Amino acid sequence: MKIPRIYSNIGQFIQPNKVLAIFGPRRVGKTTLLTDFLATCNEKYRLESGDDIHAREIFGSEDLALLKEYTRGYGLIIIDEAQRIPKIGWGLKLLVDHIPGIRVIATGSSSFELAGQIGEPLTGRKRTMTLFPLSQFELLKNHNGNRHDVSRLLSERLVFGSYPEVIVAKSNEERKNILEEIVGSYLLKDILELDRIRNTKTLSDLLRLIALQIGSEVSLNELATALGIDKKTVARYLDLFEKSFVLYNLRGYSRNLRKEVTKKSKYYFYDTGIRNAIISNFNDLSHRDDAGALWENFMIIERVKTRAYKKISANDYFWRTWDKQEIDLVEEREGKLFGYEFKWQKHKAKEPKSWRETYPTASYEIVTAENYLDILE
Image (cartoon, rainbow, N blue to C red; front, side, top):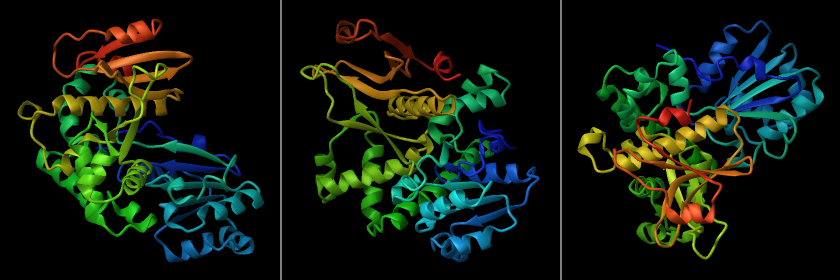
């Protein structure tokens, strides 16, 4: 079974003398998107992989004559896993600047900016889209808008996540095996290659520490002490995890610095199944004590997906005061503040008094398993 993605027709996003850059974690469906598009493509195209040595030599050469000869006769050039090619940004710049009408697609399983490759060279010459693990928004469309069919599998999504392969798998054992393979074979691969990091154990230990404290504020000093490395190295590793679509960083919000906590960050996993694979815990929600944290992680990332796919411009934060009043997610958009508190268990929660006193025009909403699709659909 194939589940249609939000970008089911990427052809509409491709423009002459522009690069369409498709980012996203490994195994979320970027190659499938390309395959489906090329199956209906009527023009001559050239498809290359960043793993191919010859492609690396051509696009890394910065030799315009060589690039022209290489692309002669093709109207569309596609490079999968383009972040593996040194100087790919400058090679693509030469293409779109000097070959009239050429169209280019480049995919990457980490932000190309991770290697400093396409950010500056392709300023004004690219369009960027990010593909995530399947969103509830996409699954709802796949189920013809039937909320019951989507929400009845909510517990499964919190435990096993939303990778396409995981969702279509026929058993929990198969889902577990897929996630363990992704973690074991793919998760750290780009970081190790792009930043020349050799200590895989330290990266794995750092991820495990973060996995055990999702929803909590992270202390770089405490992480550094636990790992036996310096604070700057911890910060660099966390930044790499962010840019490789492993972790999402949520910072504190404040307009009243004396009362509100702003310096620390919270980290969430782009997929809860990956998080559970890292700590080797696929127990049902009824048999674990981190269901609330998983729900918070899940909803933070689902809002990230919704904003990206629906082109909603917003800054997002968490909010907490020194006397421990808090809100899980605050979105700042269109000059207004929107507060969301995520509660997995059915119990009453009150709006923090300081929130209303400090931001009287802000909204506040408690999001549960019963109403969560209201803020995602």
